[in-house]
Image (cartoon, rainbow, N blue to C red):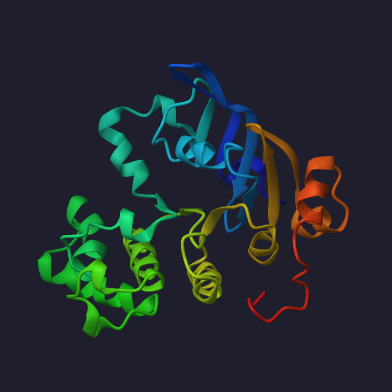
Length: 268
């Protein structure tokens, strides 16, 4: 018997909206968004700057509360979780940000950055946390011999690898990647993307991958949601969306992308 949709869905947004109050008036950043991510799936969320992608990510992570709608994580409405219990939920959902240097603690070494979530959640002793940090650094391709260097002493690509290692420290069920390569040199982007593909397959991660780059999303995602002006205008399996987009805006986005089929820059 096939599992139910509820059993296979890890996180779901239902009729999610977010209004920000500004001196110039209210701004509707997210408008009635409904989407879900199944266990083991990578959902790509694409759209131009200002379309609401990053706001959706913050709402799903419960870093911001919605104006209306709800977020269900593993079947639980996050609005119903007491504040004291949210830390336990957040342990299962981690995020990789656009600016790796800005997301790392500059006065902590690479190893200390990776070990910090373990310390905050009181996992293992100091030596055990360091050993796990060194293992994770090696997993993401950072030489453990560099573990006692500070973020400023690493390249942007290495900084993002450290940030990914930190996000994996708590063995999350959900990994949200918010434009994780857009701040990196083009020559480094493919390395980080290939790393994410390898980690997803090796660890069985469920991922929400946010990007304005459809060529990248085509390689990574099982399904793609396209956002415009705070709304999801199209949601479809990746191959279907790229082969036969239904929405005019999606067609316009695809028309602006250089063809990448057959490229060896990313492993499928």
